Length: 352
Length: 139
Image 1 (cartoon, one colour):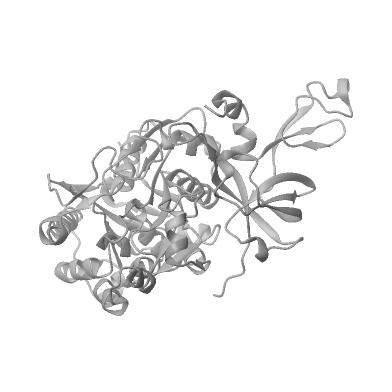
Image 2 (cartoon, chains in turn green, blue):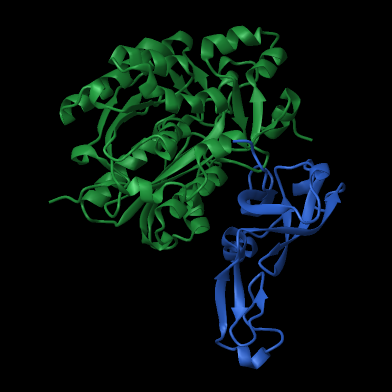
């Protein structure tokens, strides 16, 4: 009999610097108000020059441990999902594990699946915990998203991450039926070749054949398997490349607006954190909204392309653990605005 | 290669996790950690215990660096080096996420994991702990 598996703790991290979408538009001689209207994003988070996917993952991991109140050396697996791992060869997960005090008895690997590598790590942890191979597993989605100056991606590509500790003891939310569903196809909607600095994308091709097809199929199958309908869920969390896509997907799936609204505040205020996106959306729902007995449907999306779906039932333990660490909104509010030139310096385009 | 990867590697516990050593004989705390207490000497053999320093503290004093001593720090100027008091233990550290004009002695700071320096584009990236001002944000 497999163990019942759930989230025993989670933590977030968002860099302090912000760039307004209007400021990016000004640099590109575009109309900021039109862009904000079309994307539904107002500003994005920007990493400091000394931040990267490893430092973001470490801060999120520390918060997750504080929240779960477990000993770091009980963590048997650490996966870091990112498309901005600082090294091509040398694991981010080993540095994160060392920094949080989990070393040396844990397995570690870096994962990459565009924006969904963090949820792929959660799936691996579910399997290891359910089988009784490890007590706790940690999966982190963290990115300092790259975008070419002047490219459409620049308006939303941002930085941030979230870490989830998966286990069986005192979960704040359980994965219904210990299940997760994935939908994966070979779809060239967005990619970055080895040694290329910035990703390329298929423009409008990123829509119906990519984001919507994968999210909707994974969501529908998940609901079928656990026997739930949109009205049985209290919250919906989707990958948020902008505000418009998840809103439209939620409508297609038949969810009421207020169910997706709490997670959308993340993309509106900090942009698309890539591997951190759906995980930060879920973190905000768990921070202040989810109550014991609530049901949450989360579906990630990674270009290339695939979606991972999770159906969560919130438990009583959430009331006990809530507020032990910084929340997504604490990070959203703690901000310093910078101008476009300072931004270019932070992301290493201007090197002194 | 400018920095020795093995030298940096030996300092990981202190840099990543703020690990210090406490002499169980006199209670003095050393950061970076020492194998022996410089006051108790022989009495401290086998009595040095690993402890983690608090991750919040206060700025005791600071200096704004305009001319970087290492190539790895060029391009970051002006930056701030501070002495920070962590529960009675004073350590030297870099301050981050702030402008030099925004800070003053006595300000509360929190530890954050950051890139400290890198050995050019091909070399090892060295990580460690920097501190940043704790900001009061509107709710």
